[in-house]
Amino acid sequence: MYFETAPLISATVLSPSSTLRWLLVSLSIRGALGMPCVSFGIQVFCSADESVGRDLSYLIYDLICCLFDKIPRMDNSVHHIVGIVGITAGLAYGMCGSEMVAAMWLTEISSPFLHMRELLKELGYRDTNLTLAFDILFAAIFSLARMVGGPYLTYVTLTADYPLLIKAMALGLQLVSAFWFYKILRMVRYKVAKRMAPNKSIKISVH
Image 1 (cartoon, helix red, strand yellow):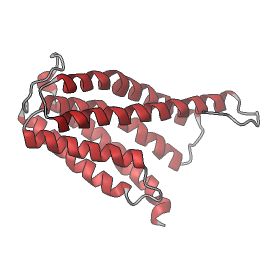
Image 2: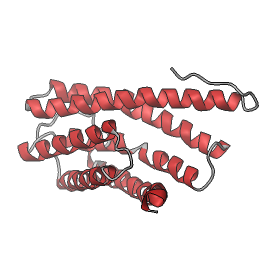
Image 3: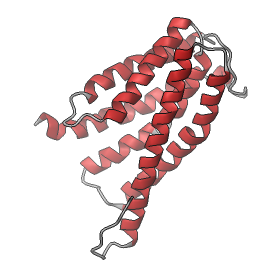
Image 4: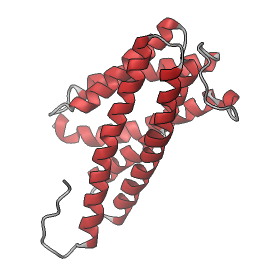
């Protein structure tokens, strides 16, 4: 019974929580609005430390929850571990504060749409126009954040005078994002092709 209701419970809980996390991160960088995303090399302000701490605790909690899935996803686990190690390293070294907050903002901006997709499916709206709209919104926002903002932020981190561990975690996070970007493109291609041929009994290749 737990595993049958777990997706609905997860989507119901995570959708508002991910939205709240993104809003809190947005508030934490309000003092940096208007400034380019550059490497400061130190923690920037108190609210950033609080946001990073909240994100670290969430990643640990969510990683534990993911381990209870019927089939734990390796890419999801790698993403959480990279995030946990990277944030811990940044806090331990007392640097990379601005980059961590910017990374949190970029990675969380698409989360509400991701969880709304799952919530709509669990509520019986699978393969509807509403679900397709959230699929496309999620894909577009994820692509812009992870594949435009993400590479720039990774470049900033790699070219800064940071410890190797922090640079490795930044590169690892971007590689996971690139892998997910590829999977999302395949998903959107499949959904659009399926919608354009609703009455044809054909096998749609997404390879």
